[in-house]
Length: 228
Image (cartoon, rainbow, N blue to C red; front, side):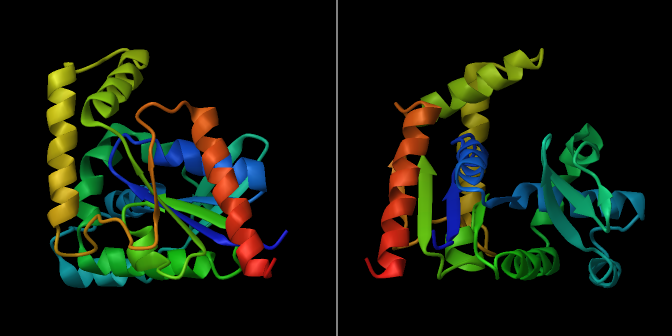
């Protein structure tokens, strides 16, 4: 079957990575988490004591950052300059610094460059907030995920509760709405639905239903690309 590029964008807590991973597994595609890429850059900055407000130091550091994704029986792993950092990037000291690092224009430009290089051979599914609009504007399939704020807050609450700590539902909902506003209003690569993206509201869908819809869309796009 002809391979394509699948771009998945959407708001926080909409299940973008869940869908992207499931699609990657079902299709044998490489799953690329742009969020993990920004976390890996943040880890590099921390380890090498790069001040994020030092433009010259940031620009120099970016020349020495090479990211790769590798898949094995234990799942998808991100490698920073040949080293598997999948576990380290989840630590709190990295998470606390990701947002400011991700807003640095030079960082975003370099990540977009590396993301585009990863997609050259097709057969990739990538999730983020600017994949269909900036990274792969010509992707064969673009999906924009959304869900009602109350449902997104409930999901995040259950996620936190499973980890042993959960903020109040109202606090989580407000945080998500604030993040939506920031994502949509930032000057560099704001979150928006691409004109040719398929909107999926998964408020009332389970993981299997959502995956079935996405797989149908993939098959449809592949037929179109194959001329059938």
